[in-house]
Every structure is written in structure tokens, then in C-alpha cells.
Length: 271
Ligand code: FES
Image (tube, rainbow, N blue to C red; front, side, top):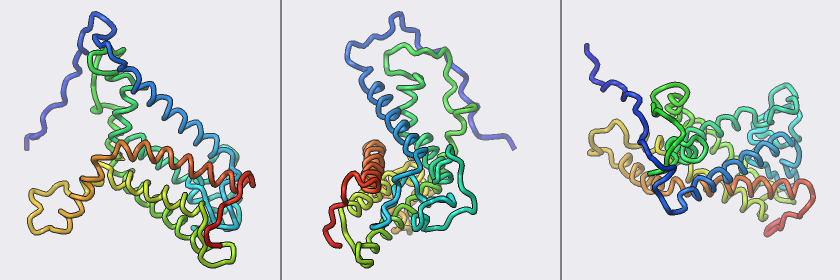
């Protein structure tokens, strides 16, 4: 049977601009801030993942999301809520060796981040009415950008990891200084981070598609329609959640690192 799909768009020449840009505004500011923000996050994350220290506060069961789930046999006692593998990892392998790459791939293939780094790092397109260095445009129809289509699968991995992060945050409430329920600033930090991570994950375009895609009509599907409506609301703020969660991940990790290293005490509200 003949395919009904349209043929792939041919590689087209880019707009021919006689000058580097026709714009007079500060169009470069957005891409510059994107480069600084994403590079800063990646650098911080790399340093912390390789540090393999100050990731766990045993008194209150605070585990930084950068080390969750902790899988090396050398994870600090109590920090591996899901158990560990039988081996100690070499220094260059992060303790969260499964979740970190999946989370990075989830963000790397995110529709919003693609837009951001295509404009800032990749320069294709750089901005409207700005000459770009590439002669042709093949979009995401060829390797390696064809791999961006895997985003829908990384979404499921991100949901699983958000569940684990939520479990960590709830466990911390059950390990106060006296063994029962406890509440400290660290609990609020972990909880805020996890709520915002859910906002980012559920506002994903793939999640919206899971809720409402491949349907001709929501007729007779009131629950799915309600969920699709809520996800669509979150989806309008996806860019905001993308940036806010980069900040909360760093702040949460930093807070746990400072308490774990004894630099600051955890302010307790209920011991
Ligand atoms: Fe951004 Fe899916 S579109 S996480």
C-alpha cells in the first residue's frame, strides 16, 4: 500500500542576509543567558556528581536528588532506600549512575530546552533576521537530531525518578531527631523541589500527548479530559518550570551539602 506520509522536506538554503543581522535590539541577550544558565548547571552538576561526598544527612535522612537513588555499594548507610548494587563504583561513575543520565537525556530532548540550545549553542536558527553559520537545514529528520524523538520514552523514566525523589522526601519526614515525624528546613527544601519537579515533568508535551493524544474526541472520557485540561494548564508554564527546577535542584543539593558537611545546621521546626 502506498505511504500517505509526505516525503521529508528537502534541505533548504538559509535566508541570505547581506549583513550579520538586520536587528537593532539586544537579540543576543536571551541566547547568552541560556548559555550561562545551562553551562553553570552542567558544571555544578558534574562537580557534585563526581565529589561523592556530602550528599546525605543521616540525622534527618536528607538525600540530595543528585545522588538518588544511590546505587554504589559504598553509598553511606541508610542513603540507599532502594538497596545498592554489589560493587563500589570507581570515582568517575556517579552514585546515581542510572537516574542521572536518564534525567539529563529527558532535559536534553525536552521541547523547550531544544529551542533554547538550538538558538544559543547550536545557532540553528540563531534568531529571526540574524545570519546563522549553517548553510542547510535538515531539522530533526536525520541523525543525530532524529534521536530527539526518544523524548517520549525518557518522559516515563523521568516519572519513575520523580516517584523515587518523592519517596526520599516523604521518608525524610519520618526520620526526625527522635525517630518519629520531624520537620526541618531541609524537609521543606526537599518537598518544594519535588513538587516543582512534578510540575516540570507533568507539564511535558509528551505527558500532554499521553493524556489527550490519538483521540478524535473526549466524548465519554471525562476523566481523561479533566487530566488533559490540567496538564495543558501546566504546559503553558513549561519553560518557567524548566528554569525554576534547574535552580531548585542546585539549591536543594547545595542545602544538603552544607548541612551534611557541618557548614550550617538544619533549622528544626519539629524535632
Ligand atoms: Fe520539556 Fe517534555 S517537553 S520535558
